Image 1 (cartoon, one colour):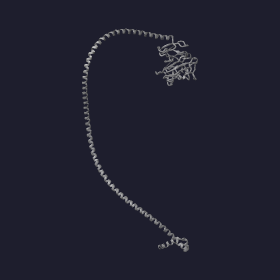
Image 2 (cartoon, helix red, strand yellow):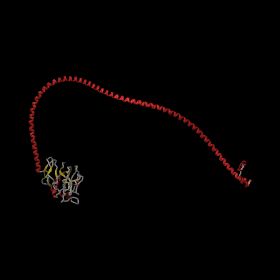
Image 3 (cartoon, one colour):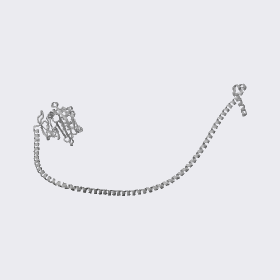
Image 4 (cartoon, helix red, strand yellow):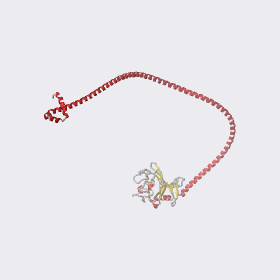
Length: 445
């Protein structure tokens, strides 16, 4: 299309836009005009859209130009600031160079001062040594002055002391004269008294000799009386071991029993059983344990009937001494020992309270009957008296028995059990005691 025709078509397009374009075209041009003009109108529509797009692009271009101008202004301002900062950097660089020069100068001064300080320190060290020497000399002089002052003080004190002693000497000489007279008089009196004392001493010596003679006679009579009393007790008998009498064999007479001999010690303890060398056989029948057996001067058992009769009506203590092969010893004490009658199989009736380092190994058999190999009263399936080769108060069987088989070396061999006190030997029944002594005495109230 020729561009010169564009205004005509634009005017026509604008006029047609007011009314119904299709209707007007139908009326004026018909279908032929519509076919010719419609492409033109479409092209005009595209041109309009391009014009709008162009206007929008121009507006955006203007905005971009304004933005570029703003950025250019900011760049100019930034360049100015950079230039200002560069100027400041140059100034600061110059200042730093000046300060470095100053520091270099100060370093030189510091080095110089350090050298001077070293020299001063050397001088101070020399001065210090010199001062120490002077102080030492001053100290020596001070000591000398103190010594001289003390000497002067001592001289003054000596002078005062001499004056005082001179005065005292005069006074003492005067007193001495008076005392000498008194001494002469007293010496005369003393000589007279000495003569009287010698006479009295002779008389006292005579009396002392008489007293010593009488004392010796009293001692002799007392000794004879004691011996006679002991002999009388030993011969005639007593119902218990006498306390305070010499250790020995005494004759005992107890209710319902014939006289019998028994060992007694100084504190009234009566020995009722003793083992120490294995010389006596303790594997005995019932009758022997009832009546007693052995030698009271060696190994023996006093007898159950005698023990029963003595403990029946009077409370007795029981004291047991124990010993091992290598020399260790111990003991246990019971304060109320009592056994039953033969009809009761001499059962262990009472023990009371106990104390002692050996520990209590007998209470286990409290209320148990006495058993021998020919009279089995224990509660075991077998015969404890046979197993231990000795009579005792057995249960199932025991943790102690002092009448069992004796092993001289203290070690159980094949065969019966040995002498036992379990709590003392840590229940090691391969160990056999080599000493035992059972003692009783009436309990003091």
